[in-house]
Length: 177
Length: 232
Image 1 (spheres, each protein chain N blue to C red):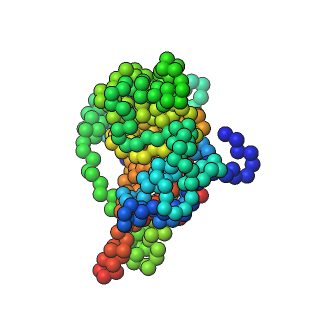
Image 2 (tube, rainbow over the protein chains, first blue to last red):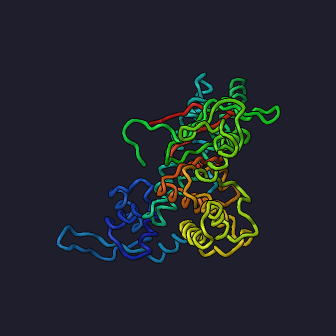
Image 3 (cartoon, rainbow over the protein chains, first blue to last red):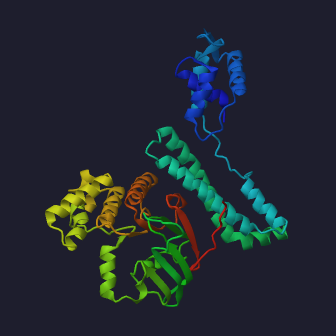
């Protein structure tokens, strides 16, 4: 995830403080890890250094002074290039589930039992996400984010089902390698 | 729902069910319980016996061995007449395709089970309209199934399965022919409606995203239920 581009995107909606950017990020990406304040400020400083954002002014509102940032023309261009660029279709072969199955086969473990338990955990999470996205209060961002997670979990699950079915053959292949 | 302490007996239970189609053993000692008001997903690969299990539990086919108990009654031993009555009053069914009568409008399709149960046409159509509304397809009520999209037709089929207030709905791949957005609309409507009405659902599906609408899942493999892998 490119935090700098996401912050640039949020700044496109209008000038903002670091605190507001963090809050809006966490609202817009409810399933993502919340941004740390430190990361927000470091990223903003880098955006300014690179000419992609600039300081518009400061506000105090009776509290501590807060710096207000805005996107620059170069920032808008950078954002448009990033948003339109193809993301490499990642093969995800470095996935931990895959690694555990292979290691389990190598070490003479019980990959079928692991796959069964992992599958149940995936299903449980899919039930939770389905409840989140079908709740009457769910907004579009929540639905899109839950859909994204559900589809990836579903892909894992299909791989796990196929692997469980193939396990006998797979074990023989790994053992003879 | 009236769970007064302890675990209530299941509403519907199949025990050690066996069923062969010719030489093929579709079920080999499958046991499954459906509790009142729950959505239970039955999943498994093609040929694992999911649909045969649904047919046995719904009283559509009789098992070769084992028992099916519904609300204290042995379904597998009931005479055909009583079975048909139960299927009309207590059970609703939804399949993947073709359960709506093509010559009737969606509204009349949904009204039909009520009329068969003795309601007047006017009353049946009023109630049918309310059910189409719940499933978000009231506007399509005067269309025949052929003029509706797949998702709209399935929602009308669900309205028809639920209009008589069944205790159990049997749904066999109800979204099997739909794209992902139509699947979501059908499943969301189904889950909301049955939870509100306290209807139990036996949901046969090969799709994990559909199974995720259920409260729990049993998996079939080679005609038997796999041991559950509980993570909690």
